[in-house]
Length: 489
Image (cartoon, rainbow, N blue to C red):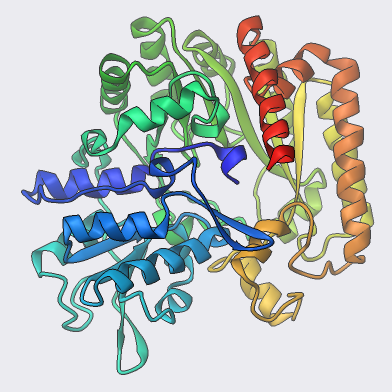
């Protein structure tokens, strides 16, 4: 996970700190345990290694700070064990410290988090308003008075009403970059361990929140809700200006789930980016809706430095996409968008999911054929095994139909599920056959890409999705270094 994703700035913590600071709570400190100890390894057992600041060093820092409250952010269910280990370490330092968990996993599965003896509270969903209210009431467990908070009472998990979210995102200040050890991130950048593995000085930006669609596998509603909200173009551009001027940003990652939902807004942002900054690049790795694209928008994206975007396709079988996945996406729009973006020199990555309940060999064949057709047009296909994340419709279906391989899957099971060990039994075939199909899909579609679009293939394999020969060379050098480091260790 570390080698694939690099060292991202924890923007969620940055937003919590800046929002609270705007209301006068300036004494908040942020510790990014990964960036503080990215070169440290703690062996948990022969199969697992914890990467980050050692637990002994964490306790030393806590003893120096002497906090009353420690909030821990956990983004992925596959990393939940790290959350629990850190919480235990905090409590071992001082049992009176109140430990609060937040982020995507606690928001999706608060009950499991509260079963941990070292976790006192969970903040669900967007944390700015609940965290501010907790600060104001001194983190008192006085019943469900603060919306969006779960806590323990008499051995039970108590839930308040859903937390309020900030309707106008411009009211939230930019993340508290001044509270991060920026030098450590820059040091990692120079070693090819920047965010998502980049060499350029890279920053993530979230310009909008929420998603009105209801795909069965997606957990975004647990965090940001179903109502899409976008920051104003002026607000987004102001953050970009700040990061370029103050921190020398060269590449941006738009982490939105629906970056182009408002076409006019997106086009305005990119047109203005092109005017202000002609030496930066950007990408949209989380995916954009394929049915939210025009030639004018694609031109503005190219002119503003866009090098790659991802499309959430999920399946190449239209009927299965509609009935089982609930995607509400016309595959003709996918082809059209892929062609438009390729025409403007933007690398297009397509996400496909295999094994959603109801999947058959015929639906997979249709998906693979669709992916191969798109790869001839320059799309880079990614195939994943479905993972039933807590808090999703898919999770409930899997529980109800007893599809889970294990009754109580571990965080490590979630980590392995996407590529190698399915967590749920496919309804139309064996697990072995599903894995065979994934292997076949990856090899055949990538071979198509290499044969029909060799330049796109080379750009993608370098990890930089750019035509810059120097960056392509650095990209391949980074991958070789990573492979040698893995073999050496």
